[in-house]
Length: 182
Image (tube, rainbow, N blue to C red):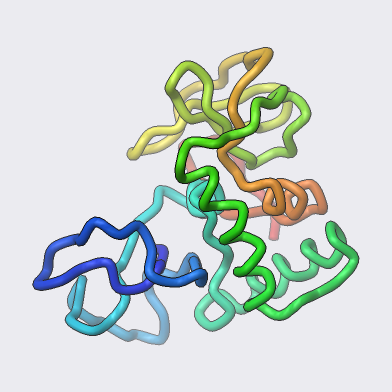
């Protein structure tokens, strides 16, 4: 589940895509807390197929409900960038990378050069790179393996690609046929 701030009013989504630089991916369940969706005055719940999708959308692991994943993420960030900054600094960089991508500015890339779990777009479809192949993304899961195209548009933000390359292994939907070890 993702959080970008309060994006609803009177139980309906508003036109803003975010209200804060803090874009996090959270657990669906945490310490038994239950609350109605789109509760007044609280964040709007966004639902993703998996963490791979959340990363491609520009979200990082939550430091509260996903502390272990957040710590692994920060360790990989340190490996990628040589420092372990506070979440605020990570969020600021991610936000600076997200905004141009939201407006359609996606770099052209060679998908084979991406690390596993990075997402890209080719011919209007989204894919995740897994080894020397890709799987087409959909709201309900990933399709069968396909060959990597020669050129595509990168969906996962550059800094998150570096974190993946440095060894961060995100959660991926079972339909991808991958069961990464933690």
